[in-house]
Figure 1 (cartoon, one colour):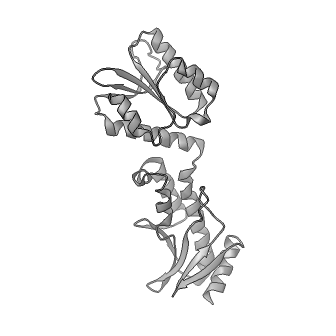
Figure 2 (cartoon, rainbow, N blue to C red; figure 1 turned 90 degrees about the vertical axis):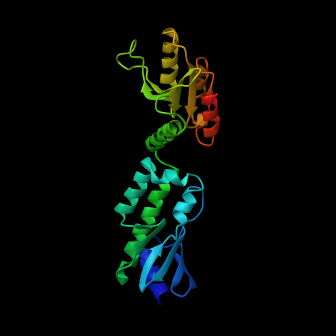
Length: 255
């Protein structure tokens, strides 16, 4: 039977804890121990299409990721790069959001399944990227928030005071001028950035800059309380997270 042959190949290439359950004619649900970081299992189906067997997630992977990440963000920046890399590395097809791999020979079930599992796990990494990738997507999301809500003549990224700071020691992640005031905004993802921001704001005060400081954290709970306390002496407006606080941030900057 195909189930016995395929199951054996899946186990040989991946792990012993693999099970196939027939769901209809030429269609099997594949149960594995592999999960997304929130605990949900990967969704995998072995099915026949036009006389060819394929392994598919039937769109579940991207749908699952969209619970936590806006679908448009999966198609841009570092997240898209990570997804494209995984698809290319493991030779997986993206058919309008459905990830699949065709089986060309009977002895390729195991290899195809191995590549498919590796690709899904790699793609799921967009939910828990390494610190550097988190930092890049956080800053990317921050820049996107600004560019989508302000005209180009209102903001400057990586701004510095050309008069006092020719060496660019005290950069501002984003300076915004609205009709009434000037904001110096910092996107902060680690303790070193907390320290650097504090030093920069003290320096701007020495230069008698007229501005409103704003700190937007990737996640304030992950940062040193001592560092946050020092920062609060020169920055009285902070947002504990960028995620889910976008409207609150824009409302503050525009009013």
